[in-house]
Length: 407
Image (cartoon, rainbow, N blue to C red; front, side, top):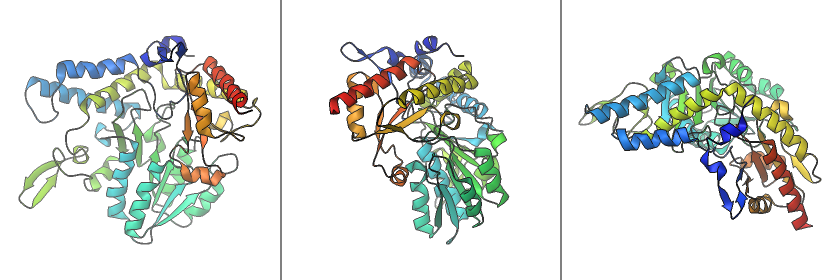
């Protein structure tokens, strides 16, 4: 089990007051996690000592920066058990990583009438890129439905596979329902009919041990900022043969091997997808975040979060008028999105903030899912390795105060 108080001491933001005399209760880690001192210091040290561009110089600072940048790539590769660090492409975030696949692999390999299979619980980042390429190429889209308890309807998935989709894109963990989807089963069945798989792991990599080789996934996208790292940097994992088979995403510096008047030769993977000066300090911070999570242990993180979400669901179910979205604790991650009869989520969040309780309100970039459930928005409390039972109690007490205000 985690020593949560010791862990909390590593995160400076958790000790601040957000209003006079009101300490922060941070329950918005699904939007972005807080950052430990080790990540902040790794980035500061780079700027103080090693600041230079990467891959472009032979002076000492340039070689130091390049080494730190590539060491971080190696750490990220080991963290998800990629077979080769070259299978890790730096991107700005999960969204850019998915767009990279849509605008390279899909444009090259999909023809008019081909089918892309998605799910009804996707974040906009795993919907809109496919809509864009579908409109451009006259592709078809189908959606795996969800059951009333917030799980994927796997019987419907089996039937949709009979339509022979060329690509299956899905979230490993829903950012609203918290549902942890059976990734191995989805990937195996998609491969049986010859489909390529794309997994949005923005919510799962930070909370669970994810092994890309064991899963067999073709492409996987995730972000540093949800896993104790900085904003502005993420990663696309892709099987090396697939990455080598597709064209560059953006054009410019670093992604080229040779340029002539009128033509160019792209660089080797992964650099052919990393045009321009990258987010160097952020990539180093990404590596430091991986070090931090490895030090804690992902199995310990997952076990702690499971106890927190079990407790949170039990407490929230006590409150009249509160309806938690998604499955029970054994099928979900540490996310509790809910509705409150007669009270808009924005009002809930605003009143909770008076007591320093930070939650998210809205459709959480999953508007089709909310439409499917017949609600315009929800309030979302999300937890992480630094969350405590006392913070859950503060949330519940805050919701009772919301009820008092509106009664």
